[in-house]
Length: 185
Image 1 (cartoon, rainbow, N blue to C red):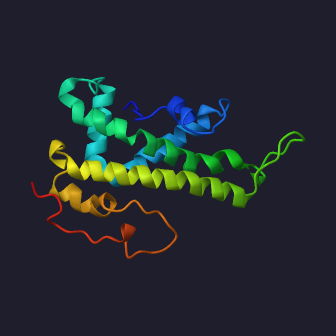
Image 2 (cartoon, rainbow, N blue to C red):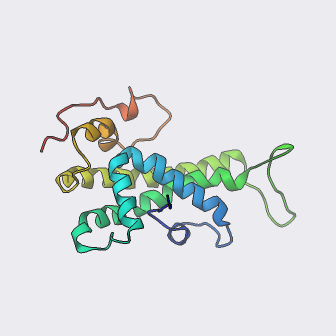
Image 3 (cartoon, one colour):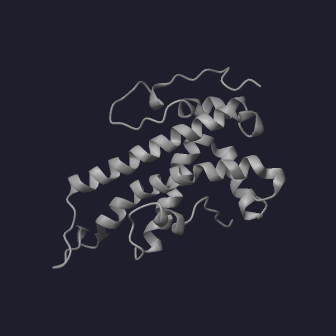
């Protein structure tokens, strides 16, 4: 099956400090991870699959699919910032036949692991903010998405109420307990 990414390499570069010459072979997998791991944990696999089907069929812009198009539009910054978090280690370190390496050049100074972590934290904070806004909008508009049935909503419930991504264990996925009545329509 063909792949459909909800954001583009161009958009990720436009909203960040990524150099225009960063290869797509690093950006595309980062976008894919942002979408297939992190966005899926917020909107659920059924809704993500349906949006990708609409995108592949080129019917996402159809007025009948306006809520889905708005969801994709609202997810753009979350996807971009999350992709950047995933991208930083991909471009900083390479795995070769002789181990993990980093490139140095007389005109460039390679960032330290601490500096890379600080950059990841910066973009992760931005992604968390965007995730919280996306979650709140999705909860306010959940009746527009039949894919957010009771079962799906229970699976992603904790990811609909907290966008915190920190190193502390908060008692489960983002510290929220699942409530079976979370999505009663």
